[in-house]
Length: 344
Image 1: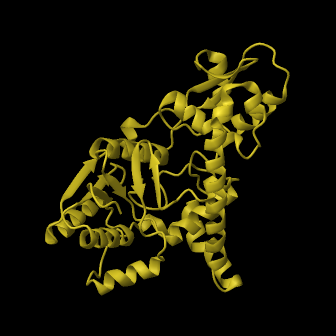
Image 2: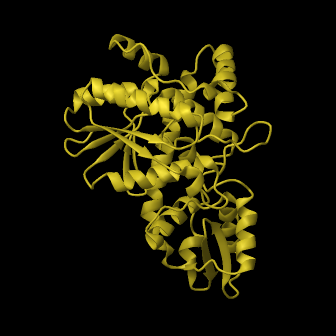
């Protein structure tokens, strides 16, 4: 944790965020504010969660802030509820915090395992497989996850030691029709039963994190070479999506994750002999142009380009191999934010 600045802790009332709040209150007294997001998606149950969180903080004299979101109303065309909820939370975080502040989230080691298997099944690269990291900046918001080294059972044991016997449980977390819940209740138990443990998965996560760190650092080093078409062509395929993402961030001032299909098409275009300006939609309303001069940012207007963008979006993946919507196993789009509660 930083030595100064305020700490805003995401507080859903679940075991993980409750443990995180208690730990932060002890280690950084006077600097912690609990923030509970009410997404407007679960009706009376969500109101009961908010009331419980407010009472929990009041009993411990901890600052509490309830933030109400209108996820359904603010949902953008083509955006799933999960995507809309995450975006709305991130936007609110950006308005709440100052330049020296951080947002603390309660993800833990079991969350990392679930995320690993979900993203592995979707074809993610190393960076996508280790998406839950101890610290990173997203949309200008500094996110920290102090509990990634702890298991769910350890967190619940800690709460009981602290005299906390009850916390909030989202009943839908037991519904294995949702893929994340299926991973938690079906996939991981089979692995643990057959292998006798899941330590190998955790070790793989650490190795993947090292690989991702190296590739991302190399992408930063190679970014200046993209001033020319030759520089783009010289990039290793593993570096192309990472360099492209950095390049877009520099051009747009915001993070854009290119669709996997668009990255593959860019690879193909870079091998072709330049012949005028060729436009390539990346998703998210962003289009680039490829010509003899190199790669440039282009406006993504026109019905033909919009149709192409929709086609790539229909592939359902981003540049890290992560699907853009959470789907049920029966093919229906998930109507919840995610398999967890109230996180960014």
